Structure formats: C-alpha cells, structure tokens
Length: 416
Image 1: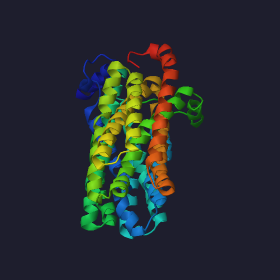
Image 2: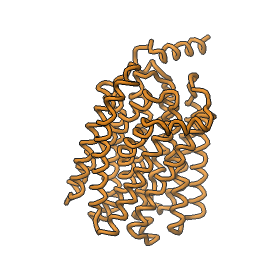
Image 3: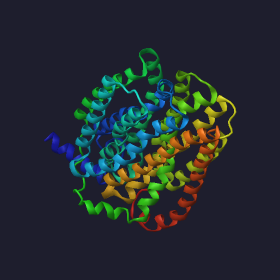
Image 4: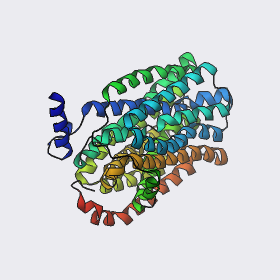
C-alpha cells in the first residue's frame, strides 16, 4: 500500500500536480546521481593535478603534457555516446554500475603495475574516460524523475557533480607529495568503491523511462539541426570548463612557477566556482529562459578569457579564471535546462551526444594550450581562440532562438 501511494505521488509530480521541486521527483536517486557523478569527475580529471609531477618523472614536453591531460576528456567524449546507448537499453542505474567497476579495476591495475611511460599515461587516460562518460548516465538517471518545469534544477543538481574536479585539485597534489603520484591512483579506488555501494542502494530507475530505440533511430537525431546546435553550444561551455579544470595545474606551475600544491589550490578555487553555479544556471534558466542565460554566459566567458590571455600576475589570472568558470558553469546548467525541453523522449542518447561534444571541446582546449605553449612559448593564443569560439556560439544562439521559441518552445510550459 505504501509503495502504491508513493508511485501515485511520483505520477502526480510528473504530471505537474505537485507544487514544489523536492516533492516532484525521487530525492535518493537525485543524491545518488550527484555522488556518482562527483566521484567520477574526480578521477576523470585526475591526470591534471598530477600532471606536473608525472611530467617531471617522465620528462614530458609541453605538447605531451597537453595531450596527457586531454586524452581522458576525448575518451570520455566518445564513450558518452556508448553510455547513452547503454542507458537507453538497460537503464541508467545498471549502466552506471558497469562504468564505475571498469574505472575502479583500471585504476587498481595502474596502481599495482605502475605507469612508466607517456604511452602508459595515454592508456590510463582512456580508462579514465569511462569516468567522464558518467555524464550520459547521471543526468538521465535524475532527469527522468522530474517534470519539465523542474528540469533546470534537477539537471543542475545532478550536474553539480562536476565539483569532483575540486576534490582532485585539492587532494591529489597533496597525496602525491606524501606518497608519490602513482599511489594516488590506488587511493582513489577507496572513495569510488564507497560511492558505488551507496549508488547501488539509493538509485532507482524512473518508472516512466522511454522504450528502447532501434540503433538507426539514433542516427535520425543527427539529422536534426537542433541536436547539432546543442552539441556546438555545449562544446564551448562544458569544453571550456573541463578543459580548464584539466589544464590549470600545468598552467599555474609553468606560467608562474607555483608549487603543485599551490597550483592545485588555485585550480580548486576556479573549479569550485564553476561547479557551484551550475544548478544556479539551470534554475535561472527555469526563471528567465535558458537562451538568455546562455547568451549572458558566453559574453562573460569570452571577456574573461581574453583578459586571461594577457594576465601578468597570479592574482589577476586567478580572478579572471574564476569569472570565466562561473560563466561556463552557468552556461552548462542553461544548456541542460533546454535539452530536455526539446528532446524529452530521447534524453539518454541526447545527453550522450551533447556530452560528447562537450568532451571534444575540452580535449581541444587542453591539447591546444599545450601546443600553443610549445610552439609560441605562451598560452595566450590558446585562450584567445577559445574566446573566439564563445563569440561564435553567441552568434549561433542568436540565429536559432527565435525559431526555437516559435516552434517547440510554444508547446511546453517551461521558459526557453
């Protein structure tokens, strides 16, 4: 009887009859999605905070350092599509468990056998890509429990798991100094295993999950212009966020000669700002529309990155990076306030596709900063080009916003 009453309350919430956000979905699942995403993100960017020490040990060039920290981002981007398909077939809960086990086993293997070459760091980066692919699992897991008017907040809270990058930036350099960077790979398995247990206990697949689609149906989405627009927009917001999160430890050590621990603290401050504001970006999108929120984010991010390109002091660079991360984090929330409105029945695969594009953007930023440093002796051009991409995204947003509001935006209760 209690189960039946609970199921009725969920049904009412999904029909928009429940008034408040916290009564409109399944809180344990939302919390589980956040925790899973948080720890997955922690290990996804682990090579960034460890990068300066690994580069010293293995004698890596600037370009190799850029590729090392960018590889998990690219692998995560590709694997998000795989996970999107898996979510659609077996559900987000089981997909998440499989992905988490692969990451734990991979990290344990790297710890026990050791990583002793540049090729080894790239192989480890591919394994860590499974953690980055958690994006395509955690967001559908949470999203399917909430009605349209609460999508921004639900996706924002689950997506705030990208704060795991803060944990990596704060603790990885410190632990590496105490025990060596290879030991950090083994230590990371401990919180991952704890969260996996909590995830298995707390998470529950939503009862209103769409029926599995045929493989050829997924290709149909790529024939839709809006899918490509969302991928482009997210490649800038999330690409900027994760690319900076992976690259800032190396930037602060190379550019200003900071210790790895101090560089980790600076990176953590920047990443914390971007992570904290993601649900706020989604909530603001619910109130004023995702398009307007996203446009503001692009403008602020572009200006901040232009400023960073010529920053002459640590304090100036740090302040501008915080501003840029705040804007990019809000933009991430705004994009995923919009995606479920347009592709509600395809949220699993669209999360994978959009997340893939975000990962590719992050790969570009992280690797291009390394190549810019090696070719010109400065990170400046890498930041300027990415600021230009933010401006291009703003132009694209202005091209499509009127059509969106006139077509699919007119058929939903949420603001776009």
